Length: 168
Image 1 (cartoon, rainbow, N blue to C red):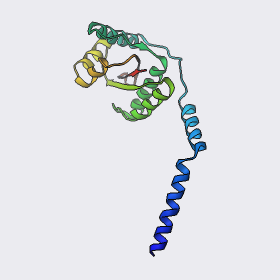
Image 2: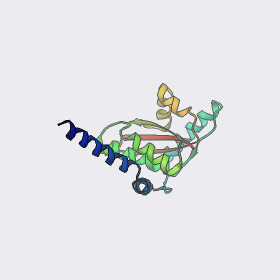
Image 3: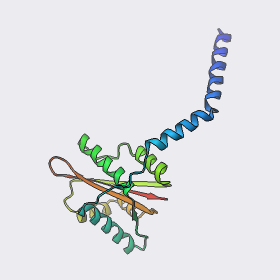
Image 4: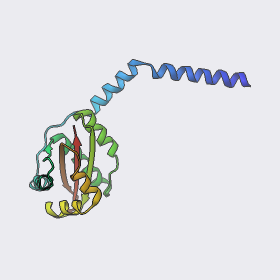
């Protein structure tokens, strides 16, 4: 019985050793990640999205921080999250790790942050709500270089906001 268990453990250990040392599987994984996250630079900003971006940058500058540059790909990733929240009728940071991986793989992001909101009528009201929340304010004041914003309305016209930040 001991011989069978030891033999089984040895075979499993050997298989794991060979699998983890295979350069072919690593190359395939890297290729799959790159194919999964293609940069999408096409994005058309609405007036309210541009206003949110301006208000965030105005606030940052008033605090002695650098203004952030918009990157369309970040706004596309943010828009996808808005669509997810609308489809699931929820406000959440669900699947944040996937969005973070996307921005790291496609844009070389070192750090990623995210603010979400729901049911604000104006750019001013959502930015003020974020600034009145310690965790959201921390993102707005964070050590970031770029950002993206997307705002989408559900069937009832209530708006979902996703604002993502990265540092390159």
